[in-house]
Length: 289
Image 1: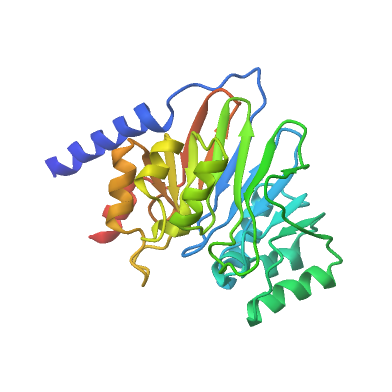
Image 2 (image 1 turned 90 degrees about the vertical axis):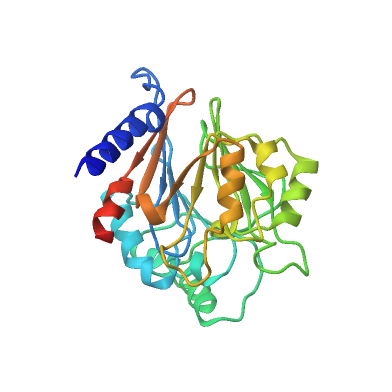
């Protein structure tokens, strides 16, 4: 009993001190970046001050209905840019349902053909809905918002596997930078270090916390304050692996995961940010009893 109260107090203190580090200004408009809990997969929604909506991935097929419901709850009536980082099932599967349910102005893809039923279903829906498809180019700034910068740092080059071909995206709003790593591994991380300034306040780490990604040298260069890991608890891959967590601790990054915290939103006015999780770690402890 006493242990529970002590733990509750620690977690409340944790949220007060770190989850809401600064109060946002009422005079500046905010952007909202939603890390949607789709289980073992990725799905991220970006809402800009001009009411533009960017959806990055849609999770596996079974998550499609959940993503659509989540978007509608956020009053998303149109997606201005739908981004498929790469054609793996845990990234594009849910996009099939999204394309069926919500109008999409334009889609961005890596241009890599994948011979799976899920990929064919995704491409068919793009064709059926008459959604314009643009192939991503490395180094290109995406024209979606007047206030939010979104740049492609990694795109498909012939011969690469799906993970190495993943789009890596850098999003900037004011002084706050986000880095979305897709499923790329350490080799691409090393290449990116040679080409770009990768400093980011908030980072979605690569490949769900797999052993293939998130080297210590890469994290030291990015120096994130917040690190998001997208995975399902008890997954068969063992994500996230211990050394990834250890590397994140070594750079003093605060870790949030969809597996523990559920749907999690970052709101920023371009100077400060606040992280708003659906759940607290206590929820997991209660379910474990």
